Structure formats: C-alpha cells, structure tokens
Length: 146
Image 1 (cartoon, helix red, strand yellow):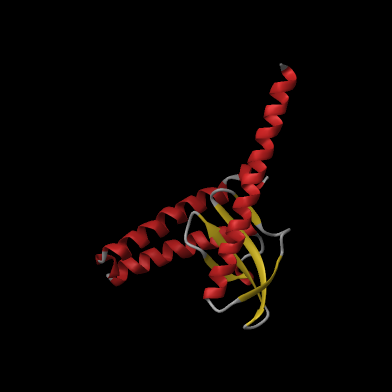
Image 2 (cartoon, rainbow, N blue to C red):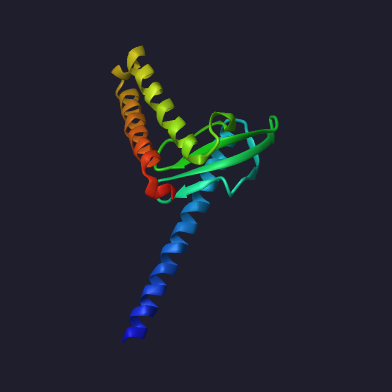
C-alpha cells in the first residue's frame, strides 16, 4: 500500500512537471509571436535570467538580431503580452515591477484621455489595472523569488 501511494505521488509530480513544461513552451511561442508582430525577430533566450510562474506569467530575457541587435524583457501569460528594453531592469523581478508601474500609467492615461467612454477601452484599462496590481503583489512576494 505504501508503495502505491509513493508511485501515485511520483506520478502526480511528473504530471505536474509535464504540464508546467507544456505551459512554458506555449508561452515561449506566444512571446515569440508577439515580438514578431512588432517587427522584432528573436534570436536567443537567456534562460538563466528568465522566470516562469506558471500558470500566471513568464518573463523572458530575449535577444534579437533584427531589426537590430537588442535585448528585451518580454512578458506573456494570463495577461497582455508586453516588452521593454532590458536597460529598464536588471532582473526579471525588476522587469515585472516596471511592467506593473507602466501599466498603471497606461490605464491612467486611457482614463484621462477620455477613450474609456468606449466599453472596450474601459475593459482594457481595467484589465491593465487588475494585472498591474497582481504583478505588484508578485514582485513583493519573497516566497516567489526565493
């Protein structure tokens, strides 16, 4: 009986890891597509600096060669995909903090400009605020960052 419990526990851990790996692959592809839509062709991921908090978000440190050689922090997950030059943050944690502040400002600018009278724009501004708050909490959670 004890052997059965250990086997099931090991099997569940392997299933969880397989799901996590699948999620990471899917969001890597999503980040690549997002950059390609912006005219940026990624050439390399710096995996040691990237962080994956499945199923919420992934922050990739990616280099591009086209249109010019440059390095970016790219975020994908259960939130709008976005990217910034690597110069704004030294670590993935700092990049998440930057995205959080940037999204708060974007949402405020949308409200100030009056475009949030349109329901779609209002929904987008509210999504930015919600995700920015979640990112802020994640940044401040030392358990996530070890």
